[in-house]
Amino acid sequence: MSNAMLIDLTRCIGCRGCQAACKQWHDLPAESTRNLGSYQNPPKTSGKTWTLISFDEITVDGQLDWVFAKRQCMHCQHPACASACTVGALHKTADGPVAYDAAKCIGCRYCQYACPYDIPAYEWDQTLGLIGKCDFCVDRQAAGLEPACVKACPTEALVFGKRSDLLAEARRRLARTPHNYVQHIYGEHEAGGASMLYLSSVPFASLGFPTLAAEPATAYTELIMRQTPGIALGVAAGASAVYWIIRRRQMMQEQAAAPATVTTAESAEEVQS
Ligand code: SF4
Ligand code: SF4
Ligand code: SF4
Figure 1 (spheres, rainbow, N blue to C red):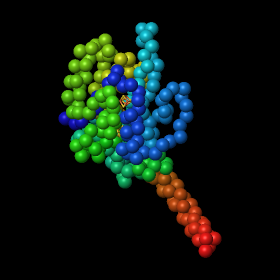
Figure 2: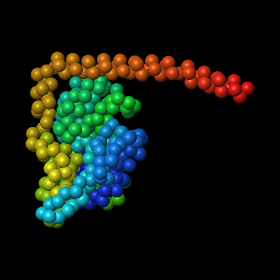
Figure 3: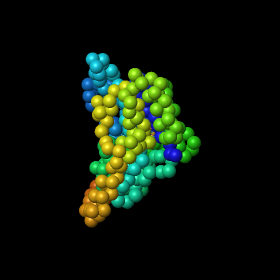
Figure 4: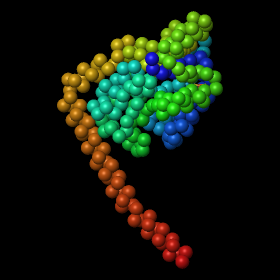
């Protein structure tokens, strides 16, 4: 049984320690953002922000609840992103992470269109790769460590473990304090199930989590990719050609700028001598 994460929203205090720890471990840069009128920042996950805490004010039965929810890739059991990728740049590992290989990616963005959670983010200026998303700390897992976000969480709102154990723990919590939760483990069945499992005090739809059937999304993407291999390869080839042209322009601009830097340094030496 593969690894998973239990995210209990009733224990989250919105400190964003997980968000900062993810940035720190993966050496992700800061990004310019905008004020949404809440503490949520930035508005959406991206190639520079692989996880974030959403802040929602929800009224249930006249009671106002301020709900904090960690968002990131769900690491689906049957990832639609991987089945849509024509070059095998995304794959589900036996341990649970849906891993990304930047060396194989041609930037066609099929994964972005296929993902039912709107997660893969396309990055023109990303040195880590063209697509950015949570990698479930695949490197830390390989070294026997828990994900950086789990380690940073001060309230144990995040728990790392085997998927079967975490499902059993989630059911225990639902049975022990049923008044604290909606009776739903999000991620157990959605789109064929996921490695990220959630518990919440309010309906997941009210937090903007997509309502998905239990059938894996891969059923649709594989059908489409089988029926349109020519289109898929054409789009992929076109996208990689566009990317090649842009990179070539960037390199030419960098080369053109390089002598100016040397001249400036030489001029500085001349001034000093
Ligand atoms: S949430 Fe999206 S990006 Fe993550 S594994 Fe599932 S389909 Fe892929
Ligand atoms: S599992 Fe790792 S990559 Fe994913 S959100 Fe947590 S720290 Fe970031
Ligand atoms: S570190 Fe834990 S408590 Fe803090 S925002 Fe993240 S999940 Fe919530």
